[in-house]
Image (cartoon, rainbow, N blue to C red; front, side, top):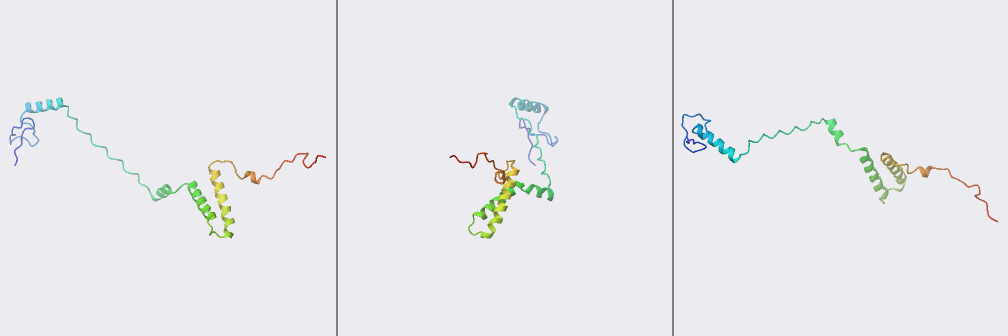
Length: 138
């Protein structure tokens, strides 16, 4: 069994002293305390707090979290329809249906963005005619 020594002066400790004893006498204990204060040894660190556990998601919440927004889905559909329109291999009889769906998706995206109605000018059939329209100067 190794011989235990005083933490301050280095003298061997009595074998009858308790296992917790670090110093050979009270004076060594007091002197060691004064030296620690004099040198300013840092205080013992506080234990780091344990991180909070991650919230547990059920399958429904996970599915909702992974779902994209409707705008993302509409943009994806718009981009795919545009690719089909630009592809020369697209059959001619499918183009009219693709264009109709493309316009509908673009309108939905535009409405979601809060924009004005872009196609309102195309459907406006009213026209103004001046009273002297059609008269000729002789």
